[in-house]
Length: 378
Image (cartoon, rainbow, N blue to C red; front, side):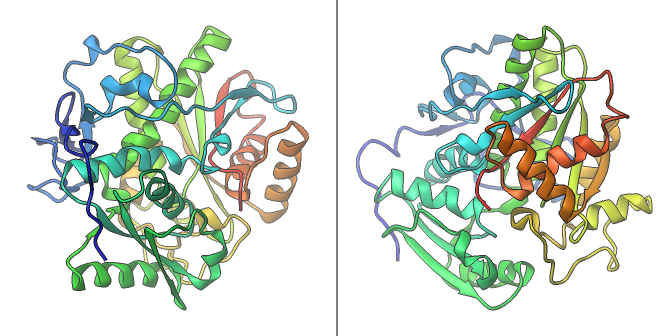
């Protein structure tokens, strides 16, 4: 069921006022549009900002970074989160995106992706998700009634994680795992001539996530007077890792930091295909790495087949001097409780970053960095 946008709201949003697309594989540049892969090599693309030295940063929230975001004539949300020093781990600071309106960092992604769809003349999309991504689009549909219709596909095992249901959300619950649910969503989109949200390949989603890292860098430098040595991120597809690397490089260009932080990524032991592939020094995911029916406490990162995204994530981890880490259920429970004692409400996926920091505490001794608390609700 299509919705008809009304008023001046959509007509003013424009592509290309600040940035252009650049392929992460072949470096070809193309104008901004609603294409999510390089026309030459089908690689993932990111936004590049040629006039970054002229960027101005005023105000708070996501709108502070408007000169490093892809759309013109659009007011981004005045939403931000805190950076809190932990008492149990010296030198570790928690960036708490669990306090954002949807309770997770994916609020940021839809805050950019939704207006990008509107700029491209699209107001009805199909998304497959284990919860957080879908919730962010549901929230946008609720926030802008009549401007966005969202078809959400979710496995029955994760149905309870879908919130912000409203008249502009059509919920499709499947009996299959997430991988097959994604295939079902794509088939539905093709059958009804609808746009999918693009998943990992959607550069606008990553641009939204990028703002968490830009914000965290500014906060960290303000509190410490120095650059962070590392960031720790729990990963599913690894979309946030690519967004983080973009933020790091831009912050370095701007002179906010004097080096690129190491990117440490973490998965739970029961669903750790990237950790397995890296442990065996493989540049790509093999059949033996894939978890067909993943289970675990951290529902938000139960992605058993990250074949598409792993090479990009691995490149960031290796070039920044980071590493892959896996954590156990007991470690997740302990970290969640420890964070709660410090007034930080974290879901198990977010708590995984604390578990990794604790696991690596000797290695990280004398260094300072940030753990990303990406959500507050399991």
